[in-house]
Image (cartoon, rainbow, N blue to C red; front, side, top):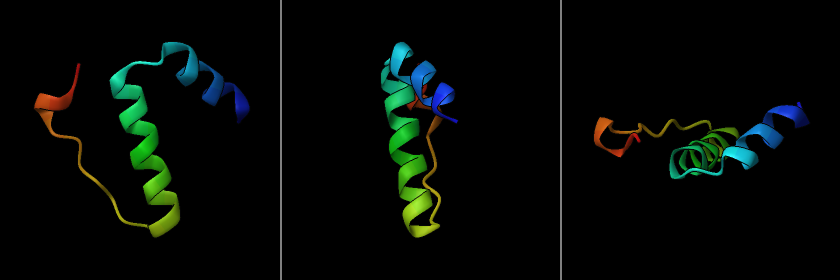
Length: 41
């Protein structure tokens, strides 16, 4: 499991950071945030 986190940290792009933020939010609250198309890199 830590391997996936390492890969994301290595990439360290805004999209990956955004994904992590949304994933953490989901794991805490169970609510899903939508990433809009214009936010993708």
